[in-house]
Length: 343
Image (tube, rainbow, N blue to C red; front, side):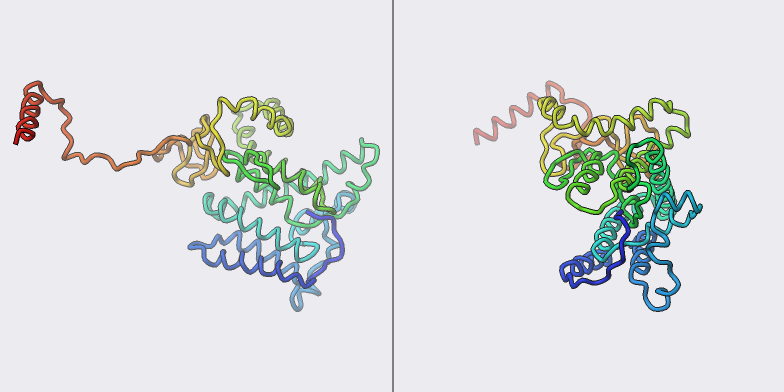
């Protein structure tokens, strides 16, 4: 999500267009094209290019950008939805759509199109709603909250940060974020701070609310089912940034008790996680059904992440004698072996 400015199309960046064409070709080679992901990418692209008569019909960036002040003063709720489909320039659009393609192919392929579409709608409304509420809160209590309350932001980034949280929540792997190897679960937090440091003009509040929206979506089922107290859930959410800051110290302090890391995987699997064989999603050991596809844990044979699979096929049943050999069988086998050597 970037602060709204005048839309810029073009610019002669050939490498940017080659990157977009490469991503499109990779998408066309997929055996199954996710329809919801493709529709979202197409809608964002059409709104950005504004071909033909759409240039006269579609509102401008200034009319739909996410401005908390305008949303609350004019009750302009359309800004909560339409601002996600507008982008500042071609680079903003291409990078966001490539990120959406990567996340959408994995999530929609495992969840199904209907559930994925519902999740995107919930995350879109939740993340942008949090932007408005938090900006109003800062305006009321902070010393200098003016820029956050009056800024005008556009882009699909808040939803992408929420999708990243959902995608990597139960992953035991590690991710390389700008050269730093961190657990995939905390990749969105790290990317949040790195983008704010190295990419000027981005909306930190929008990205942060996207991460929080992802956390709320992940843990919302526990609140609704009553299996976890709200106080404990809020405490756990607030502890995530602290755990991220303390992670380098705890990681090296506990290195003797953990498996070594190679690339993005683990030399030894994580404990307390079971994998659903319906959608291959990694779930907590306390869950009785898959958090992604809803399949019961006992509906199919699943295995814990880190279990070693047999390296050779099982012994044929017809060649396997379940009864142990008798002493007489062993004596005859020794005699036969000695006789063969004597010959």
